[in-house]
Image (cartoon, rainbow, N blue to C red):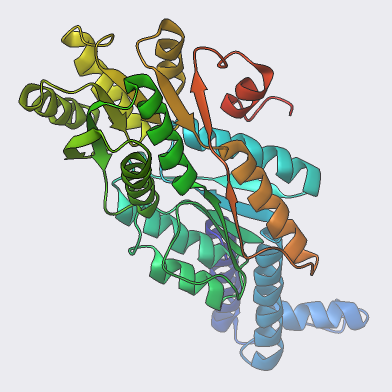
Length: 374
C-alpha cells in the first residue's frame, strides 16, 4: 500500500475499534417489543450494541473492510509508472521526464517522478526505489546513481514481478525476468569525442580528461572508448592528464584548475559529463583560455548550449534522453499487455556544435519542458 492508503486503513482500524469498544460498557442491546422492527432493525441493533456476544460477525466485516481498502490501494497504482533518475533539476533528466510524460499520456499511464537532489546521494535513491517497490507500481524506470549500490533494490523489484527498465547506465544484472536496458551508446560517445579532438588538433597535441567517475559505469565506458579511438586513429595525440569527477561544481572547478596549472601544454580537454563541462568552462574563462584550449563536453545542459553558440565550448555530445524516457514507458506498457520487448537497446548520441545547434532535430533532442505537447 502507498502512504495515502496506509493512512486510510489506519483511520478505518481506529474507527472500527472505537465503535467496537463502546458497547462493551453497555452489556447488550436495548431492544424492546415497542422499538423492535424488522430484520434490518434487529440486525442493526445487534451490530450496534452486541459485538461482544457476536465477535465473528464484527471481525468478518473488519476483514472485509481491510481487504477492500488494500485492494483499492493496490489497484490505484496499477496505472502508475515510477521514473527515478539520478537527480532532479538537471536538463539531461528533465528530457527523460518529458519523454516519459508524453509516452504515459499516449499509453494511459500516470508518471510518478522523483529523484535525489544530488547525484552522489545514493542512499536517498535507494530509499526512493524501495518505497516505490512497496507501492507496487505498474513499472519502474531507473537511472542508477551507482554501478553496484542499486543492485539489491532492482533485484527486489524483479522478485516482485515489477517490470523494470534501467536507462542511461548499466548495472551488473543480466536482462530478463522483467528487466530491460535502454542505454546511451557510450562507446560511440567516446569515439565521437576522439574523432572531434583529432580533427580540431589536426592529429597532434596534448589532451586532458576530467570527470572520471568509477561509480557510474557509463562514464568509464565513454572514457575508455575515447582513449582507444584516440590511440588507434591519432597516435600523435597524447593524453597527459586524467582527473576525477564530482557532482559538486566548486570541487570540479578546483580539479580543473589543478590540471590547467600542472599541464600548461594542453590543447584540448574532454569533460565526461555536464558538471565536469561546466566546471572546466568556468576555469577556462577565468584564465582566458577558451580559444586556445578546445573543450568538448558530454551530456546536455541548457546553459552550456549558450557557450556552444558563442564558440567558448567547441562541442557537446548529448544523449537521446527524451527517447530513453519515452521508450522505457512504452516498453512497460507493452509488458503489461503481455507483449515481448527487447532485452537491451543502445541509443546513438549526437555531437552538437555551433553549426547544427539550432537545427530542428537538435532542438527536439534538447527539449526539456515535459508540460508542453510533444
